[in-house]
Image (cartoon, rainbow, N blue to C red):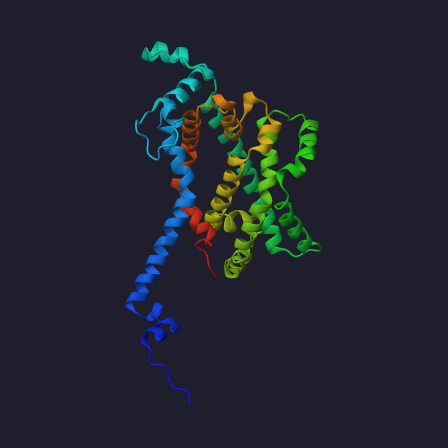
Length: 321
């Protein structure tokens, strides 16, 4: 005859409901959540932290073994070196000396400010191009049925899965044939074409959820399809358009391979330009980190300003049926 176990410890081990229904269970859940969050934060923010502290270390300290987690001697000499290098390479050293009486002389001759301007020009141009054509294509694909529509959407999605190096040679030949090699316009066209499929998919999902009653009202007001797109859909889709713009901008801003291949070093954008700081065993990693931080400041400020539009655009915007 079987007897029921009265061992409280055994019952505690076999019963997992305490994780959800008891105060100790709540403590365990909160501790697990906090530990998981801290682990993810360290994994994501660890490299950024190391870049920042490296920028504030001296040249002697970055060569120290074992490395220091926190700089022992905080220094801004790396930032000064980057700024002096930019002023000298950009030809502004004479102006600074005449205006402020400060002598500018740097052993490095890389114009970081020029790299930032080039990157902003290329990234903004590519994002605008992708949003313009991607939004119009998404409108057609969302609101009109035609033969081959599913195949076209599949091809657009498949184009995102090819690595950039796989289409490097045909892209190089195309840009060279158009006479756009070593021009920012050529890179804008390449980045715009690469990021447009993503914009199409993002905006199509948004247009699919657009309230039909609003479009019906526009039709009753005798709006043509273009007027409906221009005066109804676009103004009410600002959040999703901005989210698409940010994604396209960031993809173009961080792209390295095409910029390294299609541009000469005098017209480099930020990613290939930062590579020129790396000089084998003579690399000053604190200067590289400082240049990376300075190059990131314009993007961080811009994203901080439009972050709310980005989140709202990804979560569906303010229009729901």
